[in-house]
Image (tube, rainbow, N blue to C red):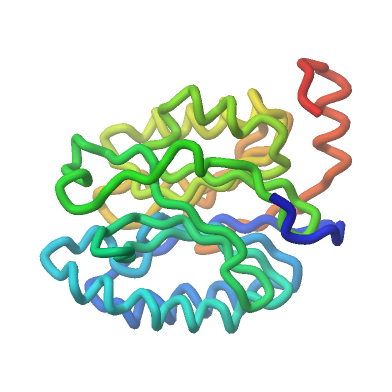
Length: 247
């Protein structure tokens, strides 16, 4: 799926912030962080960062989505923004990963592997694994894993060839090391950049970070936005140095 043929070097940014009970406050936090990044930045925000999994207020979450989409579109010019939000389609609720660029949602898909341990399947429906694909946005070949999907080998295979893998997450703190290891291994396996964003909320790992094609992991720690220069040269060098057949 080709979105744009324009090639350019970007800055990668993983976000780390707390999601409150006030949806509008969360949206304004996100918009401020995005606005403060430079032009040509690829930004990954935590999974459901605008609402959390606020199942008790499901209708309010769903009603907020169109407003949020409209506002995020406004700040997406010259940038790539990746996050997830709950939406209802044909009477069914899904958790959609969305990629915003130049005022549009250029790609979306529903979460294909729900976290049943957290009862996600009781509130929403799984999307199709077939919809998981690499898309090209402004010259960057991009794949998106949504949190729990990190655990499925079939999706790792489908992401082979991506330049950047985005991982918006709401990952439980008890499995902190799992998130750390999975994200670093994914970068090494695919010889690409991984931009992982997890929530700063108490129940989450707070392990947002960016991993290079060489496997070097930089974590946000206390930074709301961690920035790392994206380089196609680094990807080519790693794939040439350790040739495992990734083109």
